[in-house]
Image 1 (cartoon, rainbow, N blue to C red):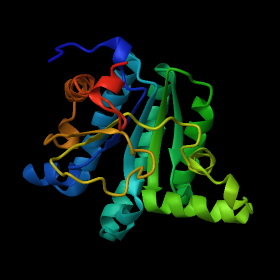
Image 2: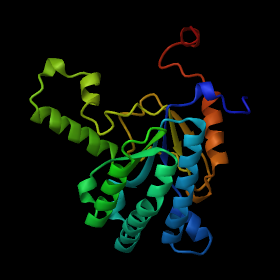
Image 3: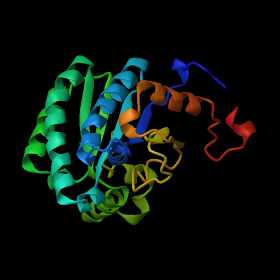
Length: 241
């Protein structure tokens, strides 16, 4: 097993389902919002470490379309936290040369959240070290259906529809597919995240709750990835040639 990260074998794109904030808070006798607040620290640490070692894209599943079905007080707390976190962290993004973009049904967000998000995206648009992708009001099924609708709207001829064209209709059209998908908190589900894009992603599950996900935990996930044999449907012999 490799013990130190090989900088020549880094995933270009890592996607993370940040799960376990509520259970982490409950284990400490606190309300769920306390877990979400502490989860922001983990976002900062993971983002800064990813930038430091040379990861080019980091996608964080921050809020799914299904999350709108949570209790109203929790959704309100999450939206308020989103506004304050983006406002506070924009300076950190600028300091670390990180570009922010978003995917999902952004129009569903409260106006204040949309404005803060738009401002941060605009301020960081020329940064080049890392692209941080926030998946907000996002689901993989919504994205695929939305892409199909737009292809129909554009009256694309059936014979011209292929994987390459379809990718251009995805919200991630300018982002490479993730080589590594991480999910925290001990759950073993995809949960409607990047369903098209993760066709050949390596999956890594950890029992660590998101607020406890440090750069050491991210390092462990990358080391695990680097010790795998990525074959893309080929045999071992073919993939080594």
